[in-house]
Length: 391
Image 1 (tube, one colour):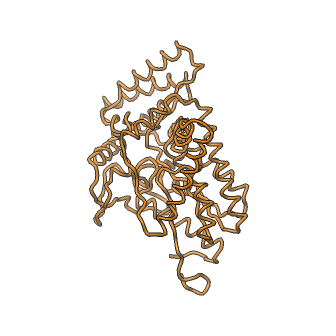
Image 2 (tube, rainbow, N blue to C red; image 1 turned 45 degrees about the horizontal axis):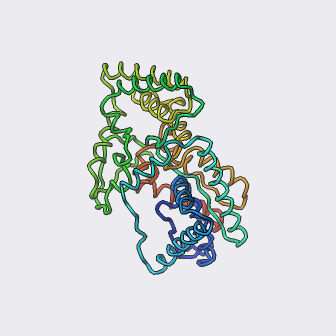
């Protein structure tokens, strides 16, 4: 854009770091403001809050106050190294260890929901801290909600301590009875083990240039109407093809005997939710059953949303995440606020964001990434650079 109103070039630095929650992002953010002196920063953060909790647990396990201080300083130095590596042109690499991830999920199996909510309060305070620091330095900020996949299974269900033994037994019996009625492809859509889930890394480290049309993707609407939500071919894991094949079955017509079984499953799940309305696993199953039966209304959407809301240790944004982003944006009127999740919901006929824009539970597909980047860039240019829209 070089029409006399906007500088012809922008230097863009991506400080996104795999696995960083808002606690470590805040450390890196403050360091980056001092070291890089940016004009504008974009904050799109909140998928990794329970990775952050794991890090704090590791600090606690180190022992006494002096040891924890050293560990905290070491983590700050790790954030400094991100800046150093970026300046030297080094690639930021991920650590991928399936055994480590399994241990991560197991760590939260007994987490009460009060602790889940406390984690989101910390998230809100970290956002406020970043915005306040930027404000003090006169740095412009774009703050965005996060787009997340409603069709990805919740990570952790913890039954409350005050649920009596009889109610617990009855609840589990209803869930078992419901799941016995599920068609085989449901198991692909709701894997029990972390290593069986489709992740961003399931698509491989490299991609080809040829678009891959996958089954199970819904047609998009709104501003993306007519756009094919295709992905790029690459060295992808076979579980990708299995998963998208299962999605095609979920979206398609069900055989009469399958419909009858799903109706029985719905009754069992309704009974389970009557006992514990905030059970994330039961909510997700109920949403899948309703979807398979052709229900696309507000209740199905609410089941999907509440499955994420009551996940005890989500590895993606949830309604709790974006509710805080919207609240905090209202507290800082100088911030340029972009509701990317609401915009993404507008690209589906039912307002339920799924695999059309996502490669897994929280990572955007190439199409989803371009969509969010477009809206963030458009908002930024309109707010501060006199841009009135266009290509």
